[in-house]
Structures are given as structure tokens and as C-alpha cells.
Length: 383
Length: 152
Image (cartoon, rainbow over all chains, first blue to last red; front, side, top):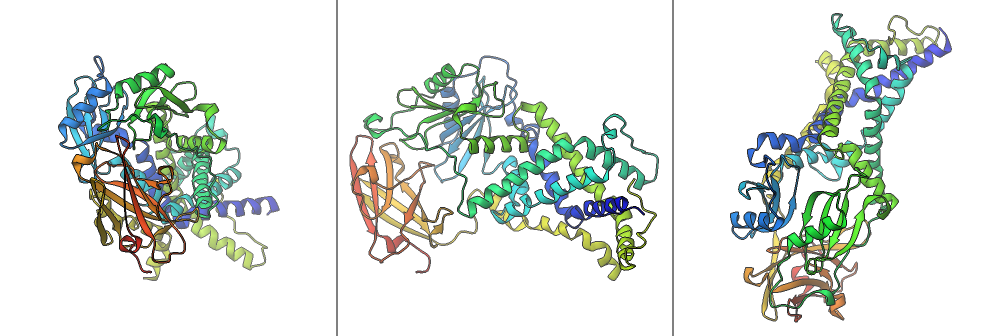
């Protein structure tokens, strides 16, 4: 046997062994991540209160705030989120018992269609996928998977000769033995999702490195100083002046006319600005944040976009958007969902193939080395 | 048994799925279930009664190296719209500009992350500064040891 062939065999064993001992965990993380991509859409399907038809003239923010606060005694709206014309506006409220509640307000009629308390399905799947609900131990357990992921991708490309043929001649022999079928499926799915695996692996690696540096006290920084309103700019009054939410949003949309409105955050303290956020089309990965003086409704600064952000912050936003597929609306999310399913299938089919084949191949290879490397076992090609 | 182990050992990583289980009940309850005991103290900053609450826990060490203690600040609901800001600081503030950590979040239960010096003599005081919307400043203090918590 040629040296080249035995080297291929070694690459192949690496490819098999990288994921096998952790396959079930990797499978779980891939599956929960896939669900997390479309978690908002699942919530929308399950909860009728979150739906809206979108027909008609939308109400101004102040009307939505008033409707939400009227529906929850003592509730104080801290933010509004718009999810598109098919979604009710989510009004997040601080409640007198220290918890928070989201009221789903119809953007046209102003009816409060329902309330959600506590953590949402979306946050649950984020926590389950991202840190196994225990931070930071779970975060490291999950992000460390980036290493076998990168390894599997690279070794897979080496052992699968002429993998690009799968792009124009995909071949899955459905009617053959299951081992053949799963093998074909693994190779075709793997080839078609090269870009996706690379994106997920690199972004996960970033999450790992980023958190590691942070915990080592070498945080990358890049965060901007918060915008605050100087004490002498704050009006003197007997009681807190009511923030004119309509004027705030009007000022922000006047500053960025093509912005698709996503969030309004009312000031968290008396010294904080109100923030209006949305994506403005030119740079879909990077949302803009418009900081507005809540007392005068003057725009203080526009953050985000290409020029305003530091390199680190830019990287952080892009990495997050690329990992979650949350940057181009529903079409991109569905692509991410489909390839997430494909990647989950890759883990599963890899395990099946391994159980049916590689265990034996490894025993034979080890036996071959023991014999002095004279006769690497024949009989289990990687085709 | 041996055969079971031979085949089953490669699926052991499925046990990682058990990791989130103990955290589920706490996650789905609106208020934390397993909380350390709380310490509550009432002070009056001028006309404003303030209740401070903290967990009976040592301060956290931040990745930046400083020690941080979290306090929850309760005002009377009728005072919420009269108070512009509540600041907490270890040691008497020299001016309003350095009044300490500004409490933020839910107005019914604001929270403040207060920096605590590494070495404590035991005589330090926690200063509460309340600024109202008409510009008035009201202060109160209490011994830090009374509302510190944790083993010392």
C-alpha cells in the first residue's frame, strides 16, 4: 500500500473519531440551535396573541404604551418591539413586584391581545442552546464544540476526494443498503453545507475566545462609553416629566428616513437617553441605534452602522448575526434553519456510519500498526 | 454487560443533556426559587424612606478585578415619580457628581452595582443619595457591615 493511501486512512480515522465520542452532545446542540433560529416564528405560530394582520394605519407609540399600561395595573412600559407587519407589538413592562411582563398590542387597533410573563420560549432555547442554562460552565462546554467542528470540516474535505462533484452530481442511493444510503447522504449534505459549517464553526470559536479573554481579565473592550444626559440639561419639575415617545420616534426616523423600526427603549434612568433601533437597509448586518434626548426629542448621536462602530464591536455584531441568521428577515432565517437541520443530520448520519463501519476499521488499523505497519487492513474503503 | 458497555460508551455524551435539568424550575419561575437569605435595611433620605435589600453573600469579583456588591432599592410607589435618581456609594460622596452607583431598571425595584474596596476596616459606611426632580439632594448612611452579608 502506498504512503499516500495510508495517510488518507489516518485522516479518515481522525475525521471519524473527532465527533464520535461527543456525537450525542453535538447533536443536541445542533438541534436546539436549529430550533433557536426560528424560535420567534414558532412563538408566533403557537401564540395567537402575537399575530397581527398589518392592514391599516399603525398607531403612534404613545397609544400602544397607553394601551399596554391600561391592561396591567401598575405596569410601566420600558420598551416596545416591532417584529414586522404580521406581528403584534411587544410592550415590555416593569411590574410592581419586580418582575417584567410583555403585553402584545395590536399595532392598528391598539387592543392588548395577550400577556407573556417571565422568560419566553425564545430565551429558553437560547439559554438551552448557548449555555445549557448554566453560565459560564455551559457556555464553555458548548463553544468548545467549535474545535471538533473545525476539525471535522477540514478532515472531511481532505478524505472526500473530489468533493466538489457533489455540487453538480449529487448522488444518494436511496434504494441501497442503509449504510450506503447514509454514507451518500453524509457526503452530499456535508458538501452542500461546507459554507454553513464554516460559518457556525468560526462564529462559535469566536464566542469561545471572546468569553475566555473576558474571564482572563483581558476583555477586548471596544464598548463605547454610554451616552448620558448632563444634569444641567435635565428639566427641574415637581414630578418626572412624561417622555413623549411619539416625538422621540419621529426625531429618530427623521434622522434615518430609510430605517425599518425595530425597538424603542425608554430611558432606564433619568440620565439616560431614549434609544430607537432598527436596520437601515444599506448594511443589513448592522443595526443603527439612535440616541434621543427624551426631554427635547433632539437626536444626540447615531451609533452603529459601518463608520460609528469600533473594529471589535463590528466583529461582535457580525459574528452574532452570522451565527443566528438574524439579519435578513424570514428568508435568511429559513435558510439557516434548513442548513441547521442538514448539519444535525450530518452528526446523526456520521454516528450511524461510524457504528456500522469505523469501529471495525480502527481495530484493523491498530492491528496493522502492531504488526509493524506492514499490512494496513484492506477491505474498508472510505468511498 | 461488557457488550453493552462496548456499544454504549460512545453515546455517553448524551448525559450532557441532563446538565440543564436542575436549572429548569428556577428558570421558569417568575421570581428566583433558590435564593440566598436576604438582608433588608430601612433608611430615610430626607422625605424619602428607602429600603435596601441585598443577598447574604460576599461581593462578586468582576473580571476587571474589582469587587462588586448588588443592592436592590425599593421606594414607596408614590415616590417613584418624585425621585430622579438613587445613588449608592461606600464612603461619603464628596459631591453629587461622585455620588456613586446609579440605581437602574424596574422603578419599583431598582438595582445598583456598588464597588467595594478590597480591604475593609469594618467602619465603612454605605451612603444613599436621593436626588429629586426639583433638584433637591437628600442623603442617608448606614454602617456597611449591617448590610454586607457573606462571611468576613
